[in-house]
Structures are given as C-alpha cells and as structure tokens.
Length: 457
Image (cartoon, rainbow, N blue to C red):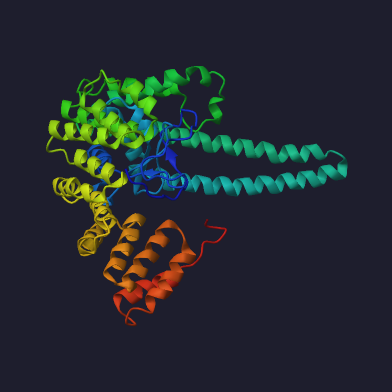
C-alpha cells in the first residue's frame, strides 16, 4: 500500500462513533501522510461506488474514493470530488453491501448539494454570531456602568449556544435526508439496503450506553436508535431487501479486509484474527503480509508463492511478492513478479511505479530508460504521486539528464509541500533548458510558486 497526503477541509460525515486511536502505519506511510494507496483496494472501492454514482447522475464528475489510514469508523465528503472512508469502516463492515450502503449515503450528500448549502448555513451562522457578540459587548458596557457586568457575558454566551444548536439541527436534518436518499439509490441500482441498516444497528448497540447521557440537541447526527428505526422501516419496504452479495464479491471484500489487517495490525493481532487453523485465502493473505513485514522474508515469499499457485491470475499476489522482495533488499528478484503484476493489472500506475523503483534500485544503468518511461506513463494517470516524481528524478540522473532530474525532483518537493526546495530546484532546472521550451515553462512554474501564508496553511 502506498500513501499520499491529502488536505483537510470542512466535511459532511456519515458518523464518527468509535473513540479515536492511533492507527498503525501502512507500508510507505508516515504520520503526516494518512492516505492509504493500494490498487487492489481502490479497484474494489470503485466497483462498489460506480453504480451508485451513476444512479445519482454523478458518473461524469470523476468522484474518487479515498481510504484514510484511521481505525475509527467514519466516512465523509468535503469537496464534491472525493468520498473519504476510514480503514476502520472497512474493518467494521462485514459485507460488501454494508460499504455500498455507506457510499449510497455519502453520494446522497453530494447529489443533494449538502456541502454548498451547509457552507451557506455556516456563513449565516457566522454573521449571526458576530451580531450576537456585538450585542453582548454592548450589554457588557451597559452592565459595567450599572454594576451588572455578568448580564453582558450571558448575553454573549446565550446567542452563541442557540446558533450552535440551530446549525447542528440543520446538519442532523441533512443526515436524515442522506439516509433516505441513500436507500433510494440502492433501490435504483437493484441493491439491498439491509447492509446499511444492519451496520447502523450494530454500531448503535455499541454506543447505546454512551448516548443515554448525550444531549440530542447538541449532536451533528440523528441519535442512533432513531436513525436505525427510520432506516429499517424504509429499508424493509425495498423489493431488494433480501438480495445478497455474490460469493465472488464477498471474497474480494474479505481479501481487502485481510490485506488491511496484514499491513496495519501487529503480528499478534493478525494471528488472533487469522489463526493458523484458518486456511481460507483471506487468512493466508493476511498472514503472508504480516510475515514479510515483521518476520522472515524467505518464509513470507514461500507463503506468497502458495497464494500465487492458488490463484495464478491474481495480479496482487505477484505485486505483494515483488514489494516484499524490493523492501527486503532484493530489487533484482522483485522485477519479474512486478512485471507480471503490471501486465495482469492492465498497467496499474501504482504497480508501474513500484516496478520502476525496483529497476532503479538494482543500480543497473541499463534499466534507467525503462524506469523513466514507466514513471512518465504512471504520472499521466497519477499526477499527484510524490514518490513517482522522486523516482523519476533518480532515473533521469542515471541517464545523465540533469535538467529533467532537477525538474522531477522539484515537482516531488512541490507534491510534498516543500515549496522552498521546489523553487530552488526549479531555478536550477531553468538554467538547463532552452528558454521558452515546455520543460523551461514547467521549471518556471516551480520558481514562481508562492510560499503558504498563515491564512492558508
């Protein structure tokens, strides 16, 4: 799994129930890079979301699903172009239908224009808040003169609380609308709303004790019992209520959860979740990943070879073997399985990047041209991948193309958010290209990057 950074912004979320925990680090992750990148998981998420997006009329908007490296249960939208889902939600969901139900809910937020309308409500609330504050200050001045200063402080706090309650009531109404619209989207695609209902019911039972002591008017979501009851009534009226996921899709779902466990959990946790007595394909997958990450590479490769033998047409087993060998200091041995994975996955860009990395890591200059071409192709489909630009810089350096090496390194720095380094490398790259050439223009763009201000950091 590969990880990229993502900006944060105001979000409309399905729910946030579980207590916050420090997530384990996925392969390639850092504390500042919370996004999980993995071809297998991303393809599954696309397959889950695409029918729902089409039914909502959003197929042409190129909405992408992004998996967040966080073990809490959450899913949210923030910009109209992405649906974010936490790894915790994928762990919690036992069936594909449960995740599809989450996507139906979040797609309903997008189709309903909830983000733009919520921003309008926030703007109104801010205006009202300023007016209330000014009125409170006036009351404080008057109170000071009369010896009743506490009255002014209360005049500030009371309207603020009322505004907060009004805004939260508006958000709760949006969540309720998204629940009901989500069921309609599931019906339109011939899928059952049972997964959404059962998932919410399970989560509701987990938090039932805590919600007894929560003020329902200070929550951004409908209270769990009310939400489940309303959903269940609507869901059971669906003609597709009893429809189940196909065995093939359920297996892909179980493999995805096993992969997340192998990368994100400690070996003892993986062993408890997938004991050696469990010889299912997902269990063997999780144990092979955990073995290579925490134990004996030779034994892990043997487990991966057994997986390949069980499913010779699965590109992700070969990708895993290549990744294990690459990270185990055997890049030359990693090339063959990664070549096969690229071919079998129809040139998946993230796997192309890993193959290029293995070619470069051999230190053999004869692989530089192939690596550079792989990376250029991958970047066209993954233009926001810092690692791809960093590897491309090395490949160009091996070829002696210092101008393009500086340009790629500058672009990598920009993607990481290191604006000073990006500008410095851009300035150096400009001196190596003819003035006005396409590469010179890209380097000039780096030179003219503006450093982040305190207002937009």
